[in-house]
Image (cartoon, rainbow, N blue to C red):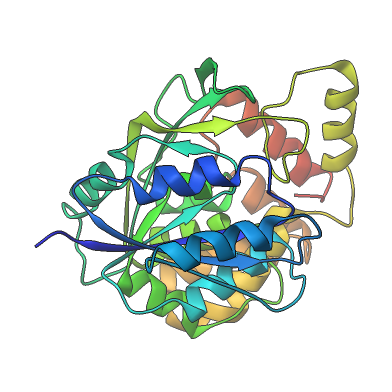
Length: 304
């Protein structure tokens, strides 16, 4: 019997490319899929398109209950999804290879499915016409060291597939804040279960002028300055805030060592000793020397 995978899609004014993505999901091979869509308050014809698909294919369901933003929309989808062995996230404007989900299922089954388990992969970056531009990662974007997940968030949500044990733990607690849903689930699976990475890409990650999310825009001087400005914004501090919320939700479930590592970030501003301890921690590090130096500089400036 083929595996059932529930695909969770969040939409917002996605009429232009939505049909391409839904078709690629419904045409997945060697798996059974159900598509659950949460619309975040679209003003275009997105709802009409979703209704069209729901009318003709029982595998498609959708709902809309206010604007939450992408992170909370996806977490709400996990909460309201029907029970399944596996779940996957979908953006509204990509196109999946026919074997995207079957490859992910095969890979995740090599992990311990009694605990939270997650698969993620590389991305094929394409333009709005699906013309290939490049691979997202030129080398493996995964560290087995769980504490590295506190310093750098590697998975793109649209490549992720996770199991029922992960979904149960996700739904156990609701964060007041998190950078994005994929960051949150990455932390959960790294600390409480296992994660596997696929260097091959099985998704055409479409980049266009209307992307809600997307980190692959043309690199311009203006973009670099925007990134620097964002990194220096004391109101952001995403790694600190993610750690604080992760600790609030799951601190009482962590091992003593894991709790100590998360606390390094939560309390690094409290004293000079804590500050220096995090600055020189060899476990809480990024995958590349340039990213790691950037992190150390942010810690020095107390805006990590």
